[in-house]
Length: 590
Image (cartoon, rainbow, N blue to C red):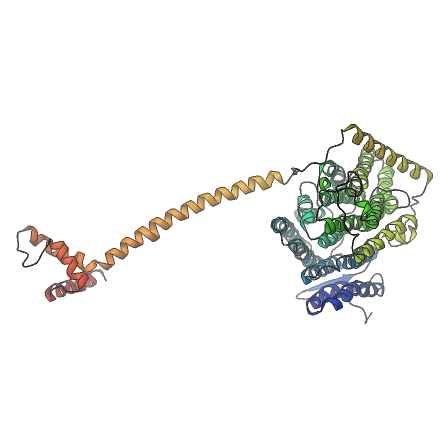
């Protein structure tokens, strides 16, 4: 134990070293870092606690149990393959942000108290938004700010709930919370923001496609899965999660089918798959929780593989819209093959990873006699085959030939995709090692005759429906368009509100500037500059009106007084009179 350290330390401190390395050393270093972290994790026994005292509390920086360990394994694997995938990147920012981000995710899942969890939860936001901004485009900048605003809102809700709960219970332990009061609801909502619940999901579909090519691969692995872990830890068996998950699994299908940006299609698909996990947590049985964790494990792999394949296409062609792609299997056969493996895995083909995990959640729903839930999940399974299993590889690599004649993806990208594709097939074929790391003993058998036949029939009829719809011209055509999601309902009004407030406040500011700064100040300045002349004229004007002669000189009395003060040629007596009057005024008023 003395030779091991908290898993997040290796990633976060390791990230800070990256800017001081040259490019060649850095390439070896970023690949070795997750390997060292993984070995360190293997050396930490289950049920280990690492604590420190802080003020009046004992913080549990590391709590290793079977639930956190499963996420810890896959987070290390995801960081490893992503580090290989982005070796072409020259900027240090993406590496530093990626490792801080993944380190924060490790810190959150291994945190044993709410304060430690919150610190890493917010660090997760910082790392992820840097990956979005690293693309350095106007769209990524705007999407990053929207992402930050939504996650800060969720973080504030989480913090408020934690403070209230600690005040109520006196405990900072992070365990089963349940919906018991306002504090628990605030924490629940905070988790829901990062989990991309319906109506809160737009940050994901808005920001992920705008991140860098490698940044999107990082993002697909950590934020939503950390939220899934948090829900599994704090709210297992919460019935409300079943219905939230059902909606998550169903509604993104419609957006994904009509979306033109293939990375945005995968973002909707990500929400769809997380819906299965949320349903499993809501059901709360051992089979359901195992299914949620196993599907999170597999989803990180096959969704990462799909994002990597689309990233490789984008890297070579500069295009990502379905309308601009097609025929790339001729130029990028390996990438096309890896993409098909990812598509088969997410569609739950037998012998691919999704087959052995998604069915656990559906079986748990069946065991609970939740017929409606089971039917919606079945519909969602058919839908994901349409938009991710067929649409992604078909429009990118087959379909109409867009004429792109490019090189195959770089070797390091192919290696990363190859490793991930291997794991997708391995988990789907030899599923026992995966089941062995799940939170509860896994007695589930995925390869029964009825399951294989049922799933094969479902996929066959889905493919048939896609083909018939495409041939008949009914399938939604890929067009250059902006699809309106729920964020339209607050982005447009908020934008109008901001413009209205800016118009009112800027108008008021301009009016006050004219009246107070320019006109009033100018008038005061003029009066102050000519004060002596004005006073002299005020004193002398009554005498002029009585017919007192002006004496030698030209012009009216006022003109002659103004000229005298302007040129400094006033009679000594007049100056003395004005000075005396000034002293009298001071005596009277002060």
